[in-house]
Amino acid sequence: MFSYKELVVATNNFSMENKLGDRGFGAIYKGLIVDSDLEIPVKEISRSSRQNFSSNSLSLNERYKITLGLASLLLYCHEECENCVVHRDIKSSNMMLDSNSNAKLGDFGMTKLIDHDVGSQSIGLVGKLSYMSPEYVATCRASKEHDVYSFGVVALEFATGKKALHAMRDKNGEEKRMVEWVWSHYDKGELLEVVDERLEKDYDEKQAQCLVIVGMSCTHLGRNLRFSMRQVVQGLCFEASLP
Image 1 (cartoon, helix red, strand yellow):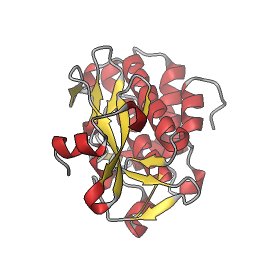
Image 2: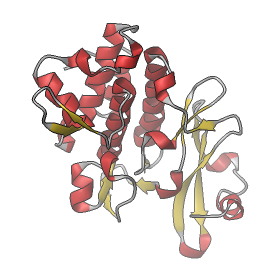
Image 3: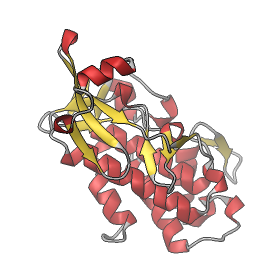
Image 4: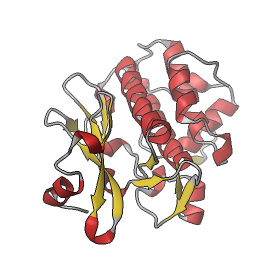
């Protein structure tokens, strides 16, 4: 981790020349740690942001908006920056909301810049196991597909109101982790059964179904089967058909 003073120097006092982008979710800057010749992305968080909010107190529509905001930010990081910005530690506790309930993603300290042509980079494991993609655990190679998997877990947390690490029992009494539990309901044609019961079915069913399907499409075990973040945004905006 770097001190604020080091980040000021690395980004040339957060100069516009080093700014990678700002889409209402906070500004991201390119930084250079001179001593180690290390290039890092630096996220500037506004003071109006609030962290560790409870999604359970939000309506499904609010959760949907936050999910779309996070997806838009990751689309920018993955596909529209000069290098692919891989966060590596996407989880609900790293998310924040600004005063207008727009999504922000914190803790860019573990982020890696990867050449678009390279695709993945071998590095050590960081983050919580329940948000890690299978291939990242097996190979320690970070990629945008790993970020997509982690995003999918967060999307399913918003849809179900359950945490990724929690174990649930299905109707047969079998214990499953949240992602596996959602997939088992899908296989039985019970997709809306996984939506947070505390919402008391006070939600748009099309929106709820879309949120669950997008989350599932991002958590395929095979990385090549997952949605890209562009497909996620298009799906959440109902601009493309979903599986």
